[in-house]
Structure formats: structure tokens, C-alpha cells
Image 1 (cartoon, one colour):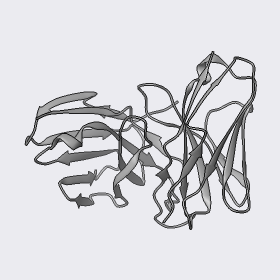
Image 2: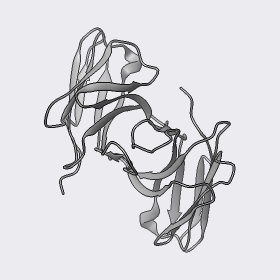
Image 3: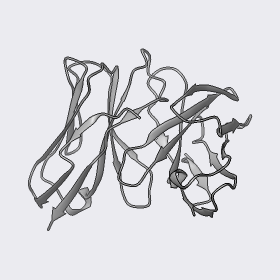
Image 4: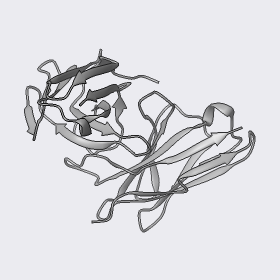
Length: 113
Length: 114
């Protein structure tokens, strides 16, 4: 069973730039969620994708957007990066419906300077 | 954003001791989960609880879903050095849990002295 994989592992960007983070779901999972984890805090829900559509969103501005592809992999895009966007971005997958807990990847560490 | 109230924030214990941590919320949750996160890695699921009052064990770990649906606790018995890490509680309000939108606590940093 292949777990959730994310790329890249680390990234440094400048304020105002745009970034794309990638995620491959665990095999058999059809739902992808993205979380932001600031240093010393718990993860915060950004949004979820199911059937290639956004299906739930947390308290994040529109410059945070995503995509889900037919193979259930996903991208997180952040435009107009701000210093406060520096965080660990976690992707998680699950199976929609029933008792399917989230399984997380190891994240992408984004630093905005 | 909203987070669960998790305590304690940190614990320093001797190997072999038992550990207890808990999570409370002002709102009801339909599912409680406990995760462990090691440095440089994502959270790993330890225990999932789906029913109020449920008590579930996973090896040396035991967790309970509070009757009020507003709290949960995690116990670790006979701690060992590899128990070191950050433990997070998480709750979901979905009536039928689909593993998506979780609200996390702020974590309990556990240190185990050999």
C-alpha cells in the first residue's frame, strides 16, 4: 500500500511570488485535504477535494486554491505569497463516506522571505 | 482559527511512567482522533473514536470519547523512549465521518527520559 507522498519537501520563495505544492494520495483513497501547520501549532484545515471539486473550505483567502486530478492526486497553489504563509503544508487522503480516517503525508516546508 | 483545548502543553517523564493527556471543546464533535507527529514528518494516526463513551486501545495506548462529545483523553502506559513526540487530538463534526475537515488541538510535547 503506497502512502501519501508530497513534493517538494522544502521550498523557499519570496514575498509576492506564487507556489505550487503537489500530493499523491494513498492508493484507494478518493478524497484529498490540505492543511497548514504553523510552527508550534496544530494543523489548520485549508480545503478538501472530492471528485475533482472543492468540497469544503476553511478560513483561508481565495489566493489559496487547489486542484484534484482524475488519478486523485492534488495540487495546492498559493498566489501573492506573504511572510505568514511560511509553514508546513500537509496533504491528507481518505475515502469519502464511512469511517475513513485521514492519512497524512510528511508535508512541504515552505519558507517565504 | 478555532482549535481544541489540549493539555498539558508539554510533559517530561521517566521511562516506564504512565502518561495522560486530554482535549476539550466548547462544541460537540462526532469523531475524535489522536495523532502523533515526529520531527520532519506528518501526523500519524494512533486511535480513532466514533461513538460517545467509546474506549479504545492500541497496544499501550488507550483513548476515550467523552460522553458529552466535548472531550477526549489519551493514556500511554509504561512509556518508552520512542514515545517521544508531539501528540495531537483532532475532532470532526461530520455526522458520517468522511475523514476530511478536522479541528486540531495545539499538541502535547512528550519527552521521555531513559
